[in-house]
Length: 636
Image 1 (cartoon, rainbow, N blue to C red):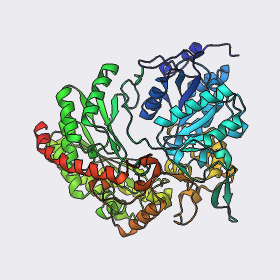
Image 2 (image 1 turned 90 degrees about the vertical axis):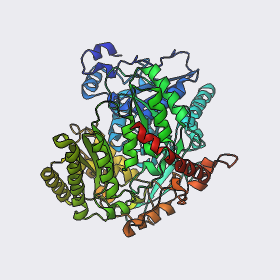
Image 3 (image 1 turned 135 degrees about the vertical axis):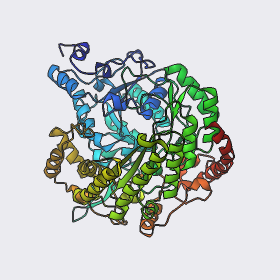
Image 4 (image 1 turned 180 degrees about the horizontal axis):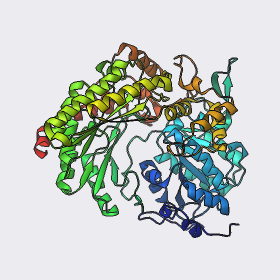
């Protein structure tokens, strides 16, 4: 037993409020009275994890169940980890400070592949065997969900079960299972078999990876009759009530404001975007529901800023009446739009909700030429971008930040030079209206091909191929008076391997952690050399996963995961990249036959929630929404 208390450790570390718990709106239940104990774990620092709305939603749902105690845990920073290891203090939950290993379930959120080594580190700090096969009867069931779970294989050695898709209903079913297991004293092996029968759950232990004579992935074989060959993701047909009593942290987090999810899903069809594929179909909240949620959030948190969350906020079919209602009800509330289309309509919406000084507007054209934007199906023109910039600067904005990608399929140096040219033109527009105060920033990320997208077969540019593109951008932006930032190609390389890896990559993850890898998403911690050594020790060729174009007929490590969008549709979209043929947003009327229209999990028992029907209704609402544009301009 450790001789020091947790309070003793808090006195020795920076930001002790990361570990204290007790925040406003947090829930602490009687540990002994709880029949079910679930720890929600986010594998990054508290400052990052507390901004994750998914964790907050599940925490709220579970704690509304009388006999369930749901608590939180985050990755301890270096200084705290050192103190914990020195004093022998195991990783604890924030609410009751119980060791993590005493919970029935530990559920991790996989939001970003570069947090994977933190998962192993947290398990080790908790005294839970890192390898799933080494866990015993008294160890928690370790579960993972989130976008990273859509290729579970690089973490299959460490996770007992993956929940694929939306978790609002799934966590309630898990709680019911735990209750039954404890009542019946179900052995661990049977618990894992029970999870196999739960819709949307993948249990790696009951599957074996096959490889061909050349050592390449050939498929995944179920080992027991109840293991399904294909696992379909879970979808909640209607969005549950919004989270209106979120925990208010004691310290500043990366998104330190109230937030309401106004819609889920996006059907713009950008070919690089995983979220646009795995979160279909689009489901919206009404303006009335959003306004009521805003009122409740203000009363429950004390925030004076509200973020309207969505993959593309101004695509909401009733965004204009929603903005009108919010500005009328809360004239002093600052409302922010984290993601918008690149068009003047979206700028009008941003103008309508802007309070006080207008600083930086963020736009994402993604590519520097019309040809390349067509290839990636980013339906934005130069005129859209320049019109949006003119509208913004004319109405008092002083800065525009633009997001682009480099290393896209079919990209040429002319496409890259187009990014500089757009930056130069936007800067000229800014000077025209706000003079020397005009600030234009260009930020680029390197393409990371993601599973379940048309780009899942694309190759990633090597660091040597990206280097001249970054030099061109640095020199060109400097000459144009445009600020420029970019991602390290080495980070993007590791992310690509972890995104597209098969089960053998899990061995490399284990080796990297054993050699000290953790907090890989933080530049001060990331060590490319550590990962290189780990790949070599595990016998994994990382370039095989990142730097080659995959054949569209070869088996994929995630073929056993059905996200709802068919492989045939994705294959057709990949072929369209080279012809630069575009497809429209299905919310504007035409179904693109992506597969969601036939997805059984969506239709429900009565078969009435067909995606095509929903799309038709939303298209009608969109057409009707344009009548509000005149009123929106009056607001501006």
